[in-house]
Image 1 (spheres, rainbow, N blue to C red):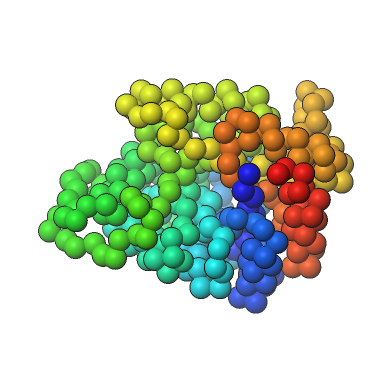
Image 2 (tube, one colour):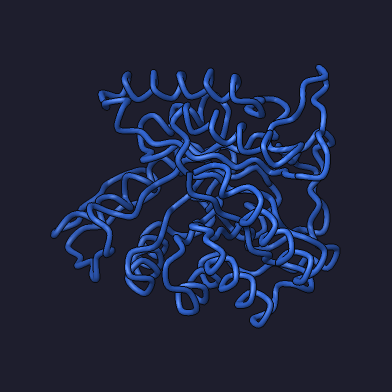
Length: 318
């Protein structure tokens, strides 16, 4: 199993020095992935439901601060050497498709082939409207079309595309990404539409386990949903065995066992051995990459959590 953690995009730890410290120390401790979330602007009033907690309220920074995802990944590409750089996740309709494909290809080149494109279609209507993105109500169709456009630009010597939301012809797209045929595409989301998108386009399905409407918080739930993704891949004419699986737990503690509403212990909580056993259960289901919520209140606290995980958990999972 390869482990990763998210870097802050807002708040007092989102400074060049703090980000560099966290990224470099995490890499040195053996973390294989560094992730960055995606918001371009935070509206002052948000009525949209945040899908990954029970309340549905988005816990953004009160100041509205947020660093731009792809710019931050470019910074990380220059200060790290081995960890994969994951967009977790990039909202496909937020940026024009040709420009986005170019920015992603550039990051892959600058990082010597370390980019992973985690992507979804977003949840915040107000942000779509604020940045002039395509229609929020059509975001699924937009995202699917953009993925096809990305692949055409990244792989074709004479890229041509004619769609409803994107079109180009008679262009040169270079440099191509270092990774061939293109950087891995991880599709996030747990809804039926997201599972279909993963089956059609993804190199890996990458859910978050805390969605109360579509629960993937236990190994048994993950297995059920993974079967659906494989079915969608088969329906799309793809070999289901070609799909990989990743997972974002969105929680972690080795100090106590947290309980689910039905009384079961929440996976990735409890003793180090219990957590290691959970990791192995996910690994048995095909998960090869796991993102763990290790962010603390300060840089020092976060580094402590990273070190504890590297020393207490990682050795038990090998």
